[in-house]
Length: 76
Image (cartoon, rainbow, N blue to C red; front, side):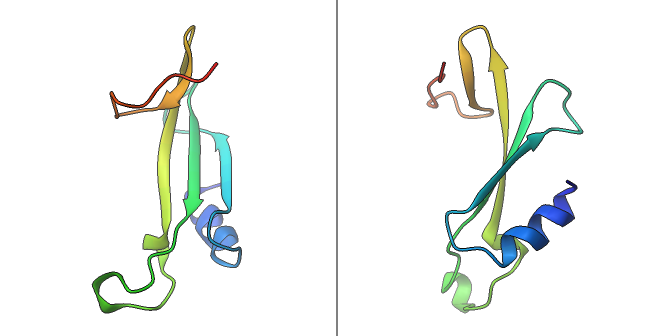
């Protein structure tokens, strides 16, 4: 699925819904997209693409973790 297809699909699902897919930009990594509750942020109550958060999951011999956060643990 493309990023746009994920945004469209998650848009009609409840908060907390997520999709994991192979990353097209980073071979060997996975993309994680989560629908969040952004209602009321900056005075807006409407669902937007901003309510879909995207993360990169990196894998190694230690396991998997969210890329970019040294505080995130590895999950086996």
